[in-house]
Amino acid sequence: MLLHIPKVLTESQLAECRTALAKAEWADGRATAGYQSARVKNNQQLPETHPTAVKLGDMILGALDRNPLFMSGALPLKVVPPLFNRYENSQSYGNHIDGAIRPIAGTPHRVRTDLSATLFLTPPEDYEGGELNIEDTFGTQAVKLAAGDMILYPGSSLHRVEPVTRGVRICAFFWIQSMVRDDAQRRMLFELDTTIQQLAGTVSDQAPVVKLTNIYHNLLRQWADA
Image (cartoon, rainbow, N blue to C red):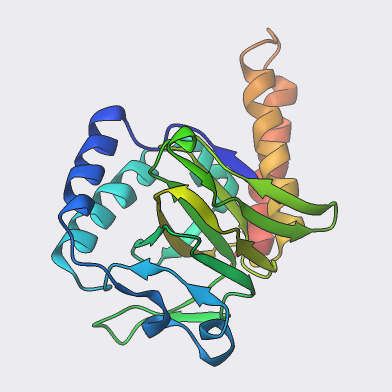
């Protein structure tokens, strides 16, 4: 399931991100890539433990904790602290697959990457190219969102970033271990939860809504790892 989550960050938070990242010391993104990915990766990245990455990552995680659409779609158990990348001058990232297990820098913890997330920090009109192309069962989906918007997609998806031919593209990216490992089960739970919320605000008889809520939680209880 590909899920577009709009306005994860406010305008003031976006401004804070842009100001801080403009002053940051970027490194070659290939330093954190595996053997195969390094062959097709050409971008810049903020080191994981860089103070700016830590500060802005905490801000993003706090925003996601308050975002009901993210919570419903991801059902997060663990979240890797956000990283930051930068593309310009025809830089790109060819077809690749994210590693199944991601360590958290500076800790002994590891996260299963059920879901990948890209949070766009640059307005789309400020650069050309840079589409995130994600291959799924319906073909290749090209994603280029407004600043502050995020795309959530299965970590098992083959994906790439097209060359940025004008301007600069800056994004945050990270991974989520969901309480529900299976993508099809997560999709059903998300659709059921969305339907319950829609019905709860439109029908006078809440008894069917309560029954659907019971089904939702029993399915979650059956499928969840935690």
